[in-house]
Image (cartoon, rainbow, N blue to C red; front, side, top):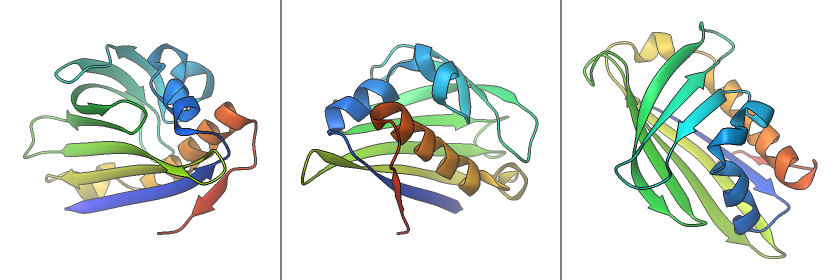
Amino acid sequence: MKEIRVETEIDAPPESVWEVLTDFAAYETWNPVFTNADGELHEGGTVDVDIETTKLPAASITMSIVDVVHNSRLQWIGTVGGSWLFRGVHTFELQALDGDRTLFVNHERFSGLLVPILTRGLRRDYEAMNRALAERVEGGSAVEVTP
C-alpha cells in the first residue's frame, strides 16, 4: 500500500473551494491532473475522468463516488483492471481555518500490483493540482503545507 497526501492552505472559505472542486464540467479549464470530468455528485454516482500525469500516458477511468459531505469531503474509488491490479481511494477534504481560509487536503491510498509503476511522480502532480485549485479559487497566493 502507498499513500500520497498533499495539503494546501487556500485564502477562501470552504464553500468557495467546494464550488470549484465539485464543478466537474470546468475541470478542463484549471485542473492539470483530472483534465476532463463528467458525472453527478452523489454517493453511489460515477464520474468519468481523463487523467494526465507527468510520468505516464493519459488515461480515462470511471470513478465511483463513495462519500460526499457538502463543503467538507469528496471521496471516490478508481480501479484499473480490478482491485488486485490497481486501486486508488482518493479523498478531497476541506477544513475551515480562521479568517475565511481553507486547508485543502488531497489524499490517496493505493493498492495492487501496479502501484510502483502507476504512482511514479504523482506527488508532484497532486501538488500542481492543489496549486491550480488555489489559483482558480482565490487568484494565487496558495501556501503548501508539508504534513
